[in-house]
Length: 529
Image 1: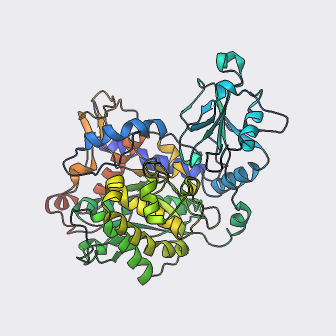
Image 2 (image 1 turned 120 degrees about the vertical axis):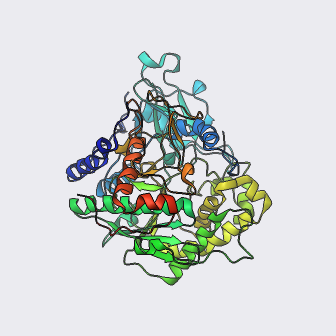
Image 3 (image 1 turned 30 degrees about the vertical axis):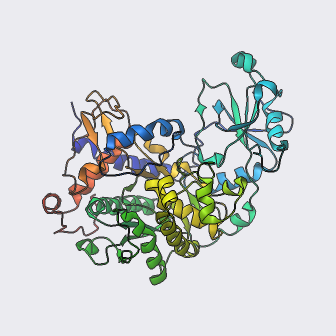
């Protein structure tokens, strides 16, 4: 038996009310985190394929799911505003004096010293060994991750083993294993960054402007739902007080206005000139050009910008969680410019780099990324030039495929000197691989979602119940989408359908919109009570 749309519509507003009630309280830390004092402690796959229309959603899901399941768990707890900033600043400051440890956690990493031949009595000693590790040669890997097994009762033959590892951007990658069944204690040795100066720079109004880019029928309806849901969550944020969620802009890179101008604040950008436009339908290349036009031709009242996309749906409010002026972004596991097979391509666009220098490039795309307006203006020209250079180079395009423009952004950010980018995995969820709606601020519905009628998840197999945005590439989804099966346990999938159903029930003329593809009636911005 299916749950009705009416029943499900109460789910998301209820969750938002819960956020409002709890936002005035100290946010809980959802993972056990211990600091080991000086006296001792206690106890690929790479998706570089080119996405074409011939590849079905089920195949994409099957290819990506294996690694995403391993790495899609969250890191920082779902904190709000100042609590996040405090956690970041206090944590990074304390890491200079203490060894911070995560119990019942095992981290990934390339081994720089094998634990079966290297033992330490305590986790503290293992951490200090990681800090003190000197690679045999300057170009060899340093230690930035340590893993220790300190409880003889559960470690058995692994007792006191101390594994020293190297993992680029360890903060942005979920642990290999965690939970009460895991005997290991792990920690990250973080690079030294000037956090004190960043914290001192946090004075003043820190509202951020949200911007999405759009072109074509697939994102036409997505933009409407995205804008509706942003206003929905922003209203909750404002009711809670001290809301930093600001204005909203759609970058329409089609060169001419459309009917949604009456509904969504929109900047009309030109597509790339004909002599530079992609000839294979890779319209994403218009995105950096649209952003460049926007920052050159407009101003916004906010000092900060959150770069987002039409298929990003807000599920709860977000404060400006940047540490000072330092950008913060969601990490993508498939952005790895430092990998051996990618180094020739990376250096082709950035010039000579050591492996260590390449590992300073953040594993991000342009969205979601929160940065200052000043930094966005700085990076946009280079983002466009680098993306065009990647597209026009056969080797680069083959290596980075459908994520080449994402590589263009992070290489550009490195090239113009934006510096260290903080990584925040709780910024965005990606169902069906993520499931807990409470942990995240944004829901990204890029993957197909397939379930049997008994609620069983069927990745790679067409489900008896399914949702895939690609099913609505030419026309919008109808109102009252069927709810997921009652036995389905994924809160994010359920929230997604609830959001779409609420938006399509509120925006007038949706039934005619589904038939014609044109918004003959537009939403006036008034939210349902």
